[in-house]
Length: 541
Image (spheres, rainbow, N blue to C red):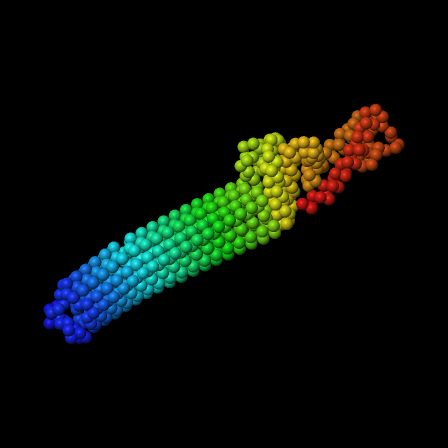
């Protein structure tokens, strides 16, 4: 375009001939001017008014546009590389295909601007206002956007990898499929942002606000989300493996089918979160709040849930095998069909939980005993050992408390058979505790416990006493048959009467038969007493 074709309607002091490289047009009014393909490289346009100007294909490289007004201007394919646009107004400008590489845009207003296919490589965008801007597929990798306002901006498929977005505002921004790996988003605001399928691996999101953000199928592996806010966020199918979520707020978040394996979720708030089918294997959830969370079919195997709050949580079909559940709280939780095999259940609370026959709480894992106790009945737990290793009584006390919790949980859910087994294990632990304590009282308690174990199985199992009664009755009847000349049926009758009352007065025994009859009378009475004791206590577990 020749000088004569250019139009400068609002400044009589500036002629078309003045439009040339290096010109000083400070404070000039070039609004609504037709400056297509103009060469204003290295020009001084400080505080100039270029609002509404047509700068199609114009060359403004190296120009000084400090505090300039370019609002509504057409800068399509314009060259602004290396220009200084500090605090300039470029709101609603069309910068499609413009070259803004290495441009100083600190404090610049680019709100509502169209930056489609613009080159912003190396641009400084500190505290820049890009709210509502069109940055579709723009390359901002490594850009400095500290404190920038990108709220409502269209950053779909944009590349912001390794960008500095410290304290930036990306609320309600469209970051669909955007690349933010290794980006610094510390204290950034991303509330209500669309981050579906976005890549945020290794990103620093410490103290960032992602509340109600859509992170469906996003990649957040190894990301730093310490103390970040993710309340009510959509994290379905998100990959958070190895992520740092310490003290993060995930209250009410949707984590359906998400992956948090090996993640650090210590002290995080996951109350009322949806973790259906989530993978939390090997995750550190120490002191985490999972109250009222939905963990249906979740994988928490080998996870650390020490001191975690799982009260009122739904855990049907969940896998907590080998998990550390020390002092965890499952009160009022749903543990139907839950697998807690080999979990560390020391001081775990199971008050008012819901269990089923398929709930597995067996095979206690106590590292202090695992190499010393001989499990003679695989599947029934280390407490079925017959050996008596010398150990700290506190160890057995902890195990007894675990079995006590299990007994109460089973009993409250009507699983009396399992409750009886837990009671036996609890008493076995107390027996070994007494032996480990030693001394006269300890040995006396141990002997008494051995007697109860051998006769009544601690008052909950009938098999031992029934077998004992049958052998006493049968062997006594055999002695009467061989030693008195009674018929077999008479011997059975004689043994039955002697067992339940005393021998018949009409046939006083003598010799060995008398001794057997006396023993049967005493032992039979004792057995009946023991039977009554077992029948009276076995339903009260």
